[in-house]
Amino acid sequence: MNDVSVLARQVVQALREKQKTLSVMESCTGGLLSSLLTDVEGASEVFPCGYVTYSNAAKLAAGVDAEVLAQSGVYSAPCAEAMARAAKAAAQTDCAVGVTGTLGRRDPANADSLPGEVFFCLLCGETVAEGRLTLDAALPRPQAKLRTAESVLTRLAAIL
Image (cartoon, rainbow, N blue to C red; front, side, top):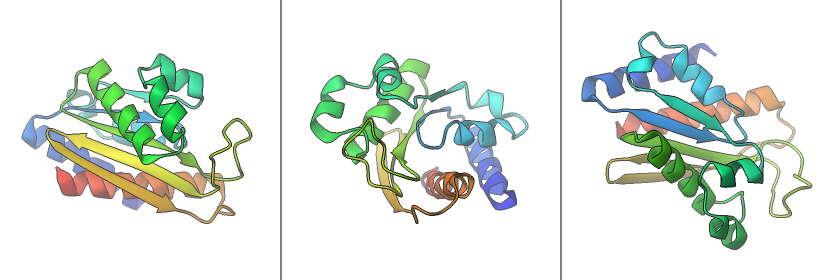
C-alpha cells in the first residue's frame, strides 16, 4: 500500500498547491480512494467528501441520471462520468472522480457486468479524463481495489 499512499499524498499536495478541491463517487473501490486520500495529513483542506454508491439505487439517490444507467449501463464510461459530475455538483468541488466496475464475478443485479472491467472518469476544470482497466477477474478483491486506486491516483496526479 506504500506506493498508493505516496500517490495519494502527491494528489493532496497538488490540490493544496493549486488551491483546488476534490470529491469522489466510487462504487467498486468501496471507499478505498476516499480512505487513501483522508489518510494524508491536511486532506480536509482539499477533500470535503466522498460518496460510496455501491448499488444502482445509491447512484441514483446521489444524483446520477437514471437515463445514463438505462442507456449505457452502470458499468460504462458514461456512468463513471455521470458519477464524477454528480459528486462535483453535490460537493461543489473543483475536481471529481467517478469509479464503477466489476472487480470479481459477474454482478447478478446488472446484466452488463464483465468481471475485471473498471471505468473511471476524472474531472478537473475543463479537463475530462477517462480510463478503462481490465483486471484479472481471479485477482483477490483487495488487490483489485488497490490496482484500481493506483491507476486512478496516477492519472489524477498527472492532470493536476
